[in-house]
Image (cartoon, rainbow, N blue to C red):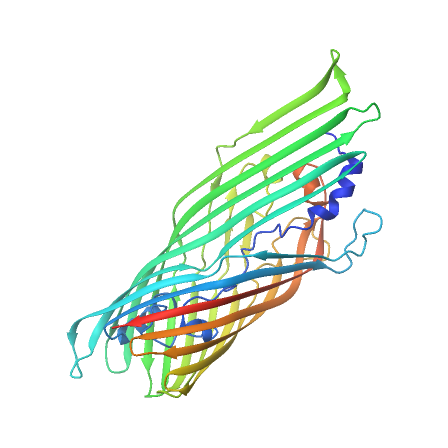
Length: 459
């Protein structure tokens, strides 16, 4: 196989410009819901909101009548930087810092609650059901890079879409004046499309060209189901406690499609007077995909004074889990632009929030949350590719207006952190072209920002 030394060296920096590692390492890059976002995701002990189907279905036991909520982002972006003492075999760029910024479509949710059944002495129902649809993550980016000179030209393109859709239903009931219990179930669909195209052309001394083009086209979907059981205890008029347990996921279906192609021509090597040309196309039919969701436990407490303030706090733990994101024969693993073997360690996160009513119709809210990485630690001299390990700290703020039958909120969420990633020493273009190489650890930072708006309608 030709190594195209001069052109590949010239494109190494270009190949590093894309955020090329899939991120199966965090559990709350993005917060979901309406009121819960403004409280930094600390919502396990609060109720009568469609987000309860996700956070703690026991909260449905406090629903009154019907409740429809829609929340979506107005704008969002993810920003990353690759920096530090990154050594590249290209003169003049040994201390180069590389950054990228990508528009992402995140997050969105819609939910509905309906109370029903017998009423208590105060004409309040004991039970309610809820429906919920969440898009907690939708990432999409496109990278185009290229270079040309008198000796040749090259190009690198990558297009990625990675999204999740959670669809679920829940039921909650008041068991006594203090205790509420609930259960919900979610179907989770993940869909990924990842396509890479590399083209390298070199001008030979006799004026002819030799070239090589490679295309890696990867697509997969998988569906899973999880159950969530929760309890909420009203210890006093002001103090509420909540706990929710999510089951490990059960895979329901999966499929994967892989198409690899390579075309090359080299006039300097002639066979029978004709320049050599090759074309190889592979479509493995043994691939399978999977996304596993670890069992998790959330516990929270809140202190509230009606029409005045709310303080809330959550602690959540996700257990370790391992899975193969896409399973292919060893001969094809080197062609994948991401790490297929996912090893998620146990991780503990904290959410804190507060809301204050300036007047009865207007509130301000703010929160802070951690989003620690579940990826394994990265050795200074890694022997293989690994997912990035970046611990994030996030903040949220929201302004709310309460009408007779509507609750409207607008706010923002921002999170940031630093850590490490692993990249091919000789760049992604070399990887696509099939050149064997080692890996190196680099400094890596991430940040997420989005503006959201939420509306709740109560009847």
